[in-house]
Image 1: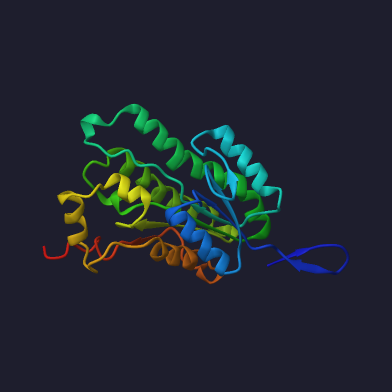
Image 2 (image 1 turned 135 degrees about the horizontal axis):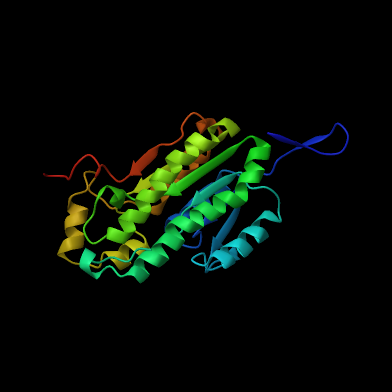
Length: 243
């Protein structure tokens, strides 16, 4: 892809990628992998060295996106930021639902809307939504599973709407991944150990496992893959080990 400048000269478009929640866990691993792939990474998070913003707030998200786009168009997007509020359904409060919808769903839509003009102008785009294996069902995850399922559904819709512009949209469904978020939602104990024991590959995943899948779907050569969900779960979507 090239971006015309003065006269007959041309220069390559910067290969820029926006990653939300890039300061830790899967987001940080994805950012590191993208830099290794040669992309210019624009990370947005409450912490870290990138653009700092509370992405649960629409106005803060808008300001962060405006800052991100000052450096030029961004044709790759990783919607990674998210929140989990575990608990049985009778204890899931509407405040839990409100913040999960804002951070896990609204933010993803808002980011794509901001980047779409640049993607359409370039006739190229890659969108990766970080969903979860919990979208297939997991105890104590009513709100989380609902919002992560939405990311899968939205990727399918975007694939249909944007494919003609050279833009692909896919989702990744991580299984148990050793991150701070996983540790917070799964404290040490029999319940967590049962999760680990049921993983067919006999280990918890790492953020780098997911980052590898992110890099694959962001690649320009992955243009015939869209509307799909890639589960990075050690085989848990196939079945529980020993069952």
